[in-house]
Image 1 (cartoon, rainbow, N blue to C red):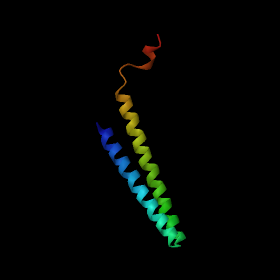
Image 2 (tube, rainbow, N blue to C red):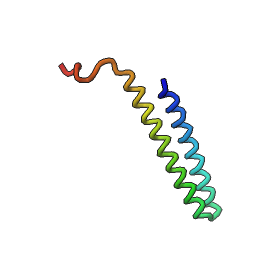
Image 3 (cartoon, rainbow, N blue to C red):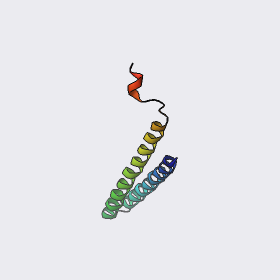
Image 4 (tube, rainbow, N blue to C red):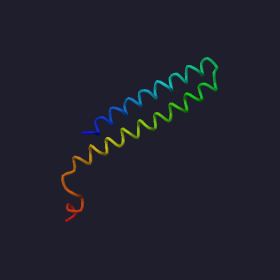
Length: 75
């Protein structure tokens, strides 16, 4: 059941990353290019981590649903 915590944390990180990218776009509209680059770089790193957590939790959920090993179904 730990995968639910990972999935919630992943979606929170994805939301935080989107918020950071919106802040980066706001910096660009105010012609603060260096600041927007830094915030966008951090936002993309957080987005990568959030997507990784969502992927891992989805794989864990699917692995728990498997009843039999795949090798026994080949026969």
